[in-house]
Length: 314
Image (cartoon, rainbow, N blue to C red; front, side, top):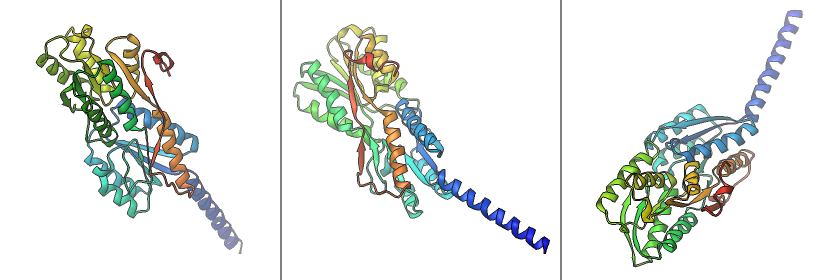
């Protein structure tokens, strides 16, 4: 009888231990964050913001970088679905990874966009308003050059948040008949985008050697703007008044704006805020809430020499 009683006691202890393990698992969700763009500073800040909030919530976060390979995101989604994660966050064009999203949907695992794009298979996409940012910077360029002259554009249509910026800039520049688009460049971003943008800008400068032939460089994000700045300075053409603008206000861009040279403006996205808002959306859904907003926008700020000091070191 004593052996039976001891055996029953051990069973009860094991049962409570198992229950405790289950409760702990429920209290500590696992979330996978998948992106091919971790080489980009903006993406790094997004992920850091998400991880900070996730740590406060006690989550387990697995950050997966496919290093520029968009197609690999699909198999990585399938991998984490098989691992039984509680939620997935993507930073990539959802239209390009729909097979992976469908796998998650079939498994009942919610997927969230973090500066990605809207899609029926995403719970929501948390991002900045790309239309507004592009309108602000393209208008800045138009006003600075008096609505006339040659403009070089750096775009990246394969990524929805950046693609929409190019569309708006095209429209604004196209509404000014005296503005000519010299080139519309899509740089290689596998190394971050600066080096290839510099090389492509060097070619544009060589093809347009006359002072005043290039009035401005509009870049859909800061890395190409920085590459263009390097090319202009290396060519000794920094005193021609070529106006450069970007979007993201990353640390290098802020330093360039503060220096008072050709790089005049960028838009500060609240990357940490986007990451935090994405974590909040995940937490709400895991708690049983339904999110009806297909897109959640986080505010932005135009940064120029007038207010750049407010952002340096932040």
